Amino acid sequence: MRKSKTETEHTINNLMKIARQHFTDYGYAKVTLEEIAKEANVTRGALYHHFKNKKGLFLAVFEDIQKEMGEYVETAAAKSNDSWQQLFNGCLAFLESAVESRHQRILLIDGPAVLGWDTFRKMDEKYSMNSLKEQLQLMLEQDIIKPISLDALTHFLSGAMNEAVLWISGHSDQKGSMGEAIIVLQHLLEGLRNR
Image (cartoon, rainbow, N blue to C red; front, side):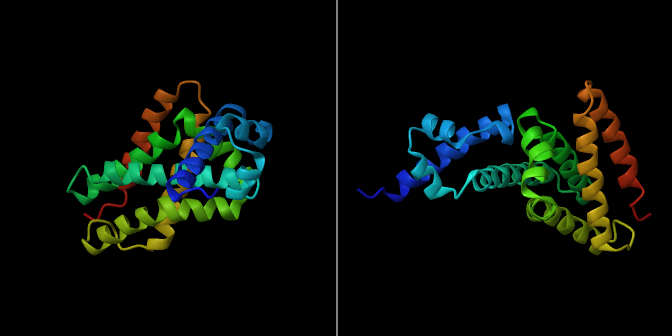
């Protein structure tokens, strides 16, 4: 009997939800597809039908988190009509979202190791850097920031924020290190302002 599109989407969403929890709790290396299939009440064959292998399932979960974070950043940025505040709000939202404990293992530890640097960067570019670049382009056009290379600036800020997330995540006092990072971010962005 063939499943309807709705049933198929439900199965995929359920598998991803369960897999996300397993990857968060145990890390990629300790997760088994058998356990995920069992918890989702589907056969291993059904799981393999939707996701070719464990890496394919991890990539889908990783991309889903990136998409959620991108939407969170966009929503936070849109809380202001001021371009400068939008940039700051978006950067801050990225830091806050990326250091969440439910994201750390998948995004910061297993993501680069499992997917490889090229895939990791493509996902980062697709869901984070493109929005950042669009905002910076708008600010250049509005003469808000100094006329410098848009590509270099986008990569520089994105790399700095990714590194800040790793730094914050490595501290026992994440709230304190987040506060320090926000102060540095404010000073860094102020240096871009066209006076």
